[in-house]
Length: 461
Image (cartoon, rainbow, N blue to C red; front, side, top):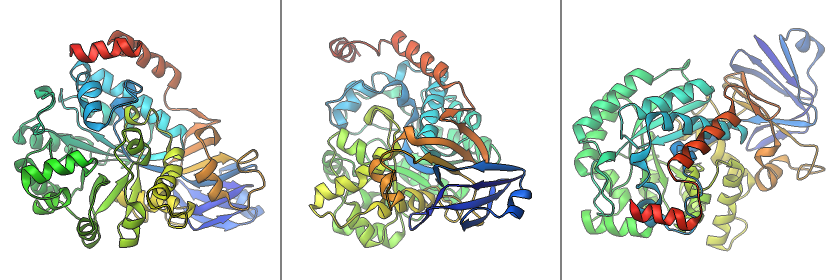
């Protein structure tokens, strides 16, 4: 099946755009990208011709960190920092959720990602109240047709001591067994779109024994690692008090750093930690909107890039963002760094898109596979309508995408060359119906109501 996209603009990478270009895809692989209109001979050889007039064709965005179950929990709190938000708003609800809830929330969250122009999602699923939960999340990925790396999270302790919820915890042996089963069932599923890796949630939700066991698991199966790191000052202080080292050093001690590891947030790093990340080619995933929402602080993104660290971008969960709007993430990664440094020259729209596409591909372990429109790359593609503000008359479409784009601009989305969003509508799931089911379920659980009612629920639990 040969598809030709022609008539509109093309952003091939963070470094290159054309005001008019065409792209040829054979099945799921890009075979040609060139300036101008597609030649008649190229059009004649096509099975499908997609007219992109009035649009820009670009690589699909890569959301390198989220928690999809939070599609059911958005808006529970808007004025708590991380530790209080977890204790009062997230942990009390977790035992109430069923495997059906996790699948439904994942479908809703993935549909929202697709409509934001996201074609790849790195999902950190850490709620193991049932062995079925992670499998149901994977099933949602398979059904909706998006590309995904699912990191199955491990929680075996709660060392900070607030709201210990044993229902979330697995012993080290249970975690390894259950994650091994999950990996064997889903690794390479959905024609290779789904891949699996382990996750260590934080240094205060995972013991040293689990960290060491996960390191052995990674080497045994040849997979990477996803982990929260230095998200708040409180987390760093606790790690220093408990282990006598900062968080990056904790991961290093257990052999967990390297190019297949993604350390999320990484806000409160010192210079030596940044050097350690650069020396080991460890990937950092920055979540600037979530970090602002929970008052965690701005990550040292421009410093990390200057040190040579690969940085990817993530939305984080909808409950610490209130959405999966990846355009906000693109804009805020630049703006938050400018607020931190008071220097408007250190990050640009090009840097933001490099983190989104090249950094995201690195986080997924797919460099040279996704994140660009170049021959040999997978056809994970998005069209944006560019006939109205902020795109009208701009000499730089990339700047318009980063600083003025929104999910409402997304017209169509292809994953592996398959059309999954058309005319801003997800084709693979009935998104309005899923949204209605989520709302009904939230009302049943008492999660919709006035702030006073919700506070009473939190105090009760």
